[in-house]
Image 1 (cartoon, helix red, strand yellow):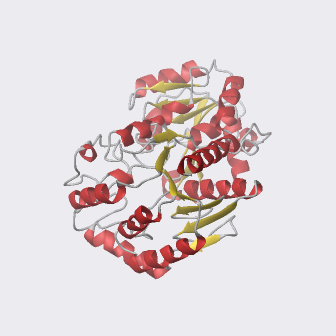
Image 2 (image 1 turned 90 degrees about the vertical axis):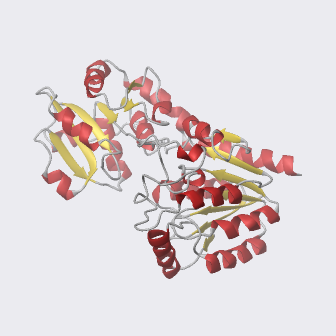
Length: 399
């Protein structure tokens, strides 16, 4: 079979790595695989198709910032891309993130409705069925269920600094994204699946295929992390994020530091230099690392991983921690709770610092064996096989 994936990036970021991992699996089984992308340089894939130019990205960005018309720029680039898709003539088109300043969704979906190919669309966030934002859980906004307007997150990604077009965008997306034959939606979490079923995308079948991780990389690692930071007799509480802000629960670690016992310490990975300079004495700050082996060593050395996220779909940090044998404590946020069970972690009421503190004491009795066993269900090879099986089933139905 010939598969074309479309994503904003290729080989970088979580969605870009999912696309290239899928590409690798397809090629290893003798299938043809291509990735179309819109931004940055492609990594870990030979058969790539660039959509648009850097200049086009900037123009689309300007249209978003001024007119709140994200997804409605890049007209010429999208038309040129469609010509390439026709020439390629894939059996399956696998959509990922269509937002990211590189595609015109109106032109693309007009073509997809006429092309009559099998389409899989993996939603990595909620942008598809809102009038503006990529996630609404933090503000508990329900406007997306009936019709967005006066968006409270207008300046959040994809940020508009002037005009609010959320009402118009919502109705345009509803018209554009509905009515596609042979389309199935995949979500990484049951939480996002339920949101999709409450949205205007409810006409489509939705299945859950969790994100996976590389268990050859994320596994218990021998390391000298404790010796390096003089933590040999400390109980290490770990937090990891690409960007630390309010939505990721930064303030909860600051509040938690005031409640720690003398033998307890917090380690936060992914902080900026400025954030590190302002930390309390019992929080060790580490900048973002792209070295996955180093990250696995930190997970292994820690006693508990805390994810006080206030807005999330299906965070892979939970999976990485489990795979290194470290139990997880998370707020009951989005799909974050779905990766753990009662033997591998604890779910705490969102924002409750008292229950978070109590959970840390309780988790000291948890076994790493249960965490390792739980992580096996998120082996990325198993997850890509689920995608392959979905591909085959859909092709059989369409014949």
